[in-house]
Amino acid sequence: MEGDASLPLTSTHTRNLASCGFHDKMHKKEWRTNKKMKKKIIFVGVFVWGAVVMMSALAAISAEPVVSNDPKQQIEAAQRQLQIEHRYLHLPVRNGAPKQRMKFVVDDHTVRDFEIELADETPDFWVFSDVSPFLRQTLTIHMDSLPANSQGLASIAQADVIPGAEELYQEKYRPQFHFTSRRGWNNDPNGLVYFDGEYHLYYQHNPYGWNWGNMHWGHAVSPDLVHWNELPIALYPRQFGDWCFSGGAVVDWENTAGFKSGDEDVIVASYTSTGRGECIAYSNDRGRTFTDYEGNPVVKHRGRDPKIIWYAPGKHWVMAVYDELEDSRGIAFYTSVDLKNWARQSRIVEYYECPEIFELPVDGNETNKKWVVYAADGEYAIGSFDGKTFTKESGKHRFNYGNCFYASQTYSDIPPEDGRRIQIAWGRIGHRDMPFNQMMNFPVELTLRTTDEGIRMFAQPVKEIEILHRKDHVRENVILQPGENPLAGIKGDLFDIRVEWEIADAVECGLFVRGIPITYDVGKQELTCLDKIAPLKVEKRKITLQVLVDRMSIEIFANDGGIYMPIGVIPDDGDHSLGIFSKGGITKVNSLKVYELNSAWKY
Image (cartoon, rainbow, N blue to C red; front, side):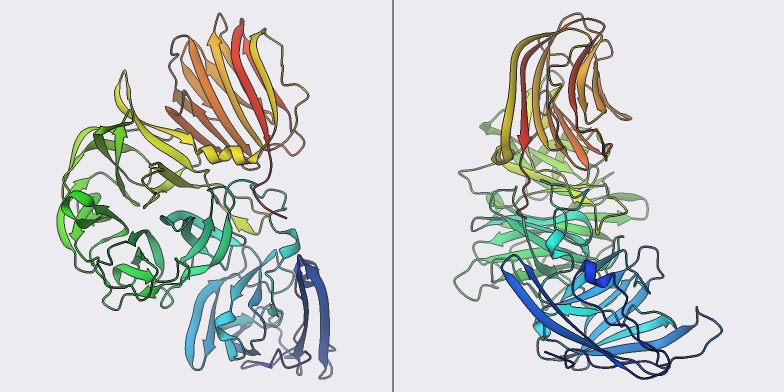
C-alpha cells in the first residue's frame, strides 16, 4: 500500500511532520522534510518476525513551518486522521516528558482516552494500542496540546506486530519466569480464575507508559502457571478518569446472574470503577472480552477492590471489599444470590486495600478447616466464617518478609481434584531502561500447618517450576568447612536452589547468589538478605531453603515455606556466580540441589 494508510495531521498551526517505520530500530531513525517546501515522504518497510511477513507504507504530509521564537509554544487541539489498515498503532514514549491527553475518535465516538508521555523526538521506547476493532475505519487522534516542534504525533505508525517484537522477552533485565507485561506498567494481579484448562491473570495495567496511570485490566493466560500468553486488554475505562481498579473473577457455574448466552459458562469479573463504584462485567467467550452489566454499580460505598467468592453452605455469593469510614479502614462483607443485588452484612477493621478471604484445611485434614483473611500487605488472620461474618481466632500474622510483595490474590475455581490454593502477588521492582515496569511474583501454594506457635500459613513455589528445570547439580552429605564452596564453577542467572543444612558449630551459613548473600545467623536464629531480616528457628538442628533466582528477583522460602522472603534486586551484570558457605565452624549440608532453569518465554 502507499499513501492511504495515513491521512493528514491537522492543528491550529500546521507544521513539518516526520515519517517513520515499524519497529524500534526503524523508529530511532529520523526522517525529515524540507522546511521550505511542501513534500510527501513515503517509506516502505518489509521485515519478518517469526512466521509473520509484513509489508506496509506510511505517508506523512507536511506543510509550511510555523515561525516561533518560543520552541515550547503549545498548540491546542492538534489532531491526525488515520485510515486503520493494521492491528496496532505504535506510540512513541519518552519517560519524564510532559503528560499529554490523547483521544482516539471513530464516528464521533471517543473509543480511547488516556494520558501519555509522548516523545517529541527520539523515544525511550514504543507502546502500542490494539485498534483491530476499527479496521477499515477512519480514526482521528486528538491531542489537547502539543509542543510546536513536536514530532510525536506525526511519528505514530501502524503495524501488524507490536513494536520491538523481534526482541521481546530478550531484553537485558526482562524476568525469564515471572510474568511481565510486554509494554508499560503493571501492578495488582486481578481476576485470578481457572477455567477450561487456563489460568487467567488479569492485572492493573497502564499500556501507554512506564509509570502508574490509565488503569486498565491487562490479561494473560497460562496452561501451567509458568508459560504465559498475553492477550488483548480485557477491561477498558468507560471514559477518562473512570478507571478500572482492582477486583476478582469467578465462574458462575449455575448462571445465577442470568448472563449466559450460549454453551460456555460465564466468567464474571468484579472491579472498582473509580467514577461509579463496585461493578461487574461478564464474559461468554472464556474471559477474552467482557460486557459491562447495565445495572452497575452493584455496590456504592467509600472503598474499592471487590473480591467475590461462592459460599457453598449458604448457596450465595460473598463480596469482600476494602471499606473506608471516617475513623477506620477495613473489609466489608456483602452477600448476594445473583451477583447483582448485594446486602451489607458485617465489617472488620485494620485492613487496607485488596482484601482476600478463603478456606483451607489444617495439616491437610479436610475435616478441620479454617478461614484466612488478609489485605494488601499479606498480614493475615485465621478464624471462622459463617458466610456473613468473620470471627478471628488468631492474628494478624506476618506473611511476607521481603521487599517485593503487595496486593496478592488467590485463584478461584481451581478444580477439586487439584484443590490447591494458589497465590500471585505484585512484585514491586522495575528498571528505568526497560519498556516494561514491575512484575508478578512466582505463583505459590498456600497451606495451613500446625506449629509450636499455633496454626500458621506456609507458602511454597508451585510444583510447576520443575517444568523449567534444565540441568541439575546435586551434592549430598557434604561437610562444609569455612572457605570452601562446592558450587564454585556454576554460573548463570536463572536457578532453583534447594538446600538442607544441619547446624554443627558454625556461627553463620548461607548462600551467595550472583554476589548477593543470603545469611543465616545461628545465634540470633535470623535469616537476612539485603536489609530484610526474618526469624527462622532451627528445627531438629536443621534449616531448609528453596531459592528462585531470576534477573530481577530472589525469592526465598525457608523451612518448607514457613518464612517467605521475596526480594526485588538487580544483581551485578558481571557476577553470575553461586556460592555456599559456612563461617566460624563447620556445617553439614545434608542435601544440595541446584537446578539451572530454562526461560519460560519462547523467542
